[in-house]
Structure formats: C-alpha cells, structure tokens
Image (cartoon, rainbow, N blue to C red):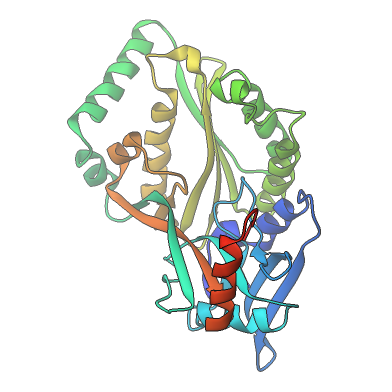
Length: 317
C-alpha cells in the first residue's frame, strides 16, 4: 500500500513488520477500504478506550498509512467506532509531507521533532558551492592532512543482500566503541535491534532498496551509514563513526561523496534524515519541518470523558 499512496520508504511493510516482530505486546492490523480497495492501514496497540498506533524507537514514523485524499480525523473516528469503548486514538510521529495536521475540535496535535531534509536537484557543483565556507575548507584540510600522513581515504557502497550481515556486524562493532555503548543504545550483536537491522536490510537489498555507505582510513572502517531508498526518497536511518579519529570528521568525509553520488545519479530527489535537527545538519541543508503527534477523539463527549479521566488521581490517560 505504501507505494500506492506515496508514503515513505520507512513505511513499507518490510520495515514496519520487522519492527512489529519485536513488540512486547500483541498488535492488531486495521485496514480501511473503499469499494474493496485499501485506503488506510494501521498497526495498533489496544489499550482499553485509548488505542495507540504502533511505533518503536527504530521507527522514524508511526505505523499509520493513508491515501492523501482521505481525512485523518474521519479515518480515526471510523476506527474508534469499531473498537470497544474507543474514546481516543493516539497517533505518534506523523509526517506532514503525507498527512497535514488536522484542524478539528476533536483533534489535538503536538510537535514531536523538527527534522531536516535535503532537496536533491540541479548540479552537485552548485549545491556544494552553496555550502558554508567553513565546511568546504574544513573537509579539504582533513583530506590534505590524511594525504600528508600517507593515509588513503576510501569510500564504498554495499548494496547486495549477501553483504548486509557483514555491514551490520561492522556497524555494530564500530558503534559499540562509541558513546552510545555507555548509554546502552548501541546496536551490538547481543542487542535485539541487531537482528532487526540485519533482516530488514537484507529484505530491502533483495529489492534494490538498501545501501550501506562506508568510509575507510586505509583498511580501517571509520564511518558507516545505513540507508534506504525508494521512489526518489533516500533515508539515512543510522550513522556511526570512530570517535577516536577526532578532530577529523569521518562521517562528513563519507557524506560529501555520498551526496555527490546522489546528485549525479539522478534517481533521488530528496534526502531524509528523520531525526532531531542539529547544528551539523544546517551545514548540509537549510530545509526542515515538524513531525507531529495527534490525538483524535471519537466525539465531543469522548473528549470530555478523556479530559475527566486525565484529571483523575493516578490516571495514565
């Protein structure tokens, strides 16, 4: 359905259901049809009266997909009408590129993150010339420093399904040596997300929709980005780099030729970072937008009841 309604590559079934396989609780699939054709789809966590659209930490967007002509408010209310005591539907991480924030007294929205993106159009030379002087000069000096030390700078792109296991294993080894390991969020061989990324990337690679971009100093892997692409969209899912290379920036040394290949290739029209906007993003792009959450109530009475429940002591509504 994602390809039919124009959702993101991270809303393809191969991605969403791989994440759903890790869910601690059972999920329900809801499908809305018109004249027998699916017009909306969602994976749900069923809470009494307050169902939620499924989302996990590795998912940039919630598991809600709809045709652009449909109304999010009416779809959600139709779904609530089919659920026992359906008062409010919580939908997290909605991209306004596909679903504009509803304007309705039955809907409350909340900004989630501001996320950067990059339009890939025109010539790469023009794009690069428009970057800040500091970025361009800094990367040039880094290359000169590596060359002066006799260190060969090399990048590669892995695309084949057979390469994904190695790509994820190498990524995990690199990330496990960084700051994320201290926080317990690094993708490591014994982390549940290791299997998720390996299996998911293998399935996408089998369809020609996965790329892992890697940067080496000599034979030493120093940066890696796990990426998906489909219908002109290129999503950078995860990035890691060797922190011991500071003050060099291997992630930037990887990203420049990666973006150059996207501009020159002609198949990609936009790059999505799908993460919180940070200062370093602004060196590469000036474009961003807000991802948002929405709560849709079944009706005015339902909204009043939910408000009353929220005021009750110990309420989780």
